[in-house]
Image 1 (spheres, rainbow, N blue to C red):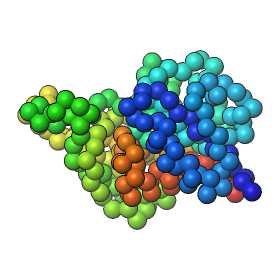
Image 2: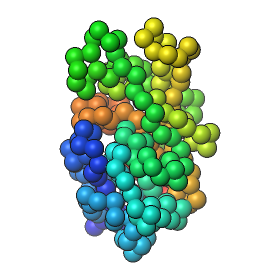
Image 3: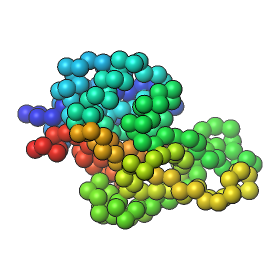
Image 4: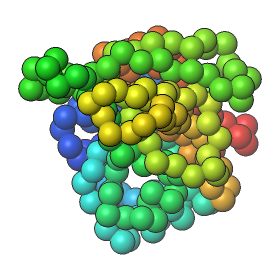
Length: 236
């Protein structure tokens, strides 16, 4: 018997593999006791009855658009206690034209600095860099990231614009390179949480492709983050 309901909403830019990446986590959600519903459109957010019965939303919708009614339903659900979780552009680069959505999430993708120009083959790997995800002091103690040491990835390194209402569990630092215009290292949140009304928001910026999400550190963080965000996890 399941006693929790998860809503997986996927779509948007296909370059982030919304179907393949969300399918990776469906067995985990089901094993964790969730009755999982998958939707290919964010218009489901406008269904007040569905949203009121949902304990966790897992969103993978990069860029794209959201209607006024759908966003209002999403925000109201989170404020009422529904958890919202996601990774990479599926949550941190969604609905760029909706400033209220950016406010809800607390951090927004700005860019992913690329490799040296002479080393770019002209495909998505132009923006693949080797970088470190560094745990914060909070992250070393938080249930999502406890026991996970700093780790390295070779993939897109997100530069995130953010506010100080988020609780940062891990960061990543963009170094100064001669082919970039900034003049000092810039540190961005890589994993964060946000309290919003009665709800919780979880974001991990790694997750460009399935292989990144299969990294043991990333997968553990995402799985724990979904459970942490879920309403039922807080009331059971």
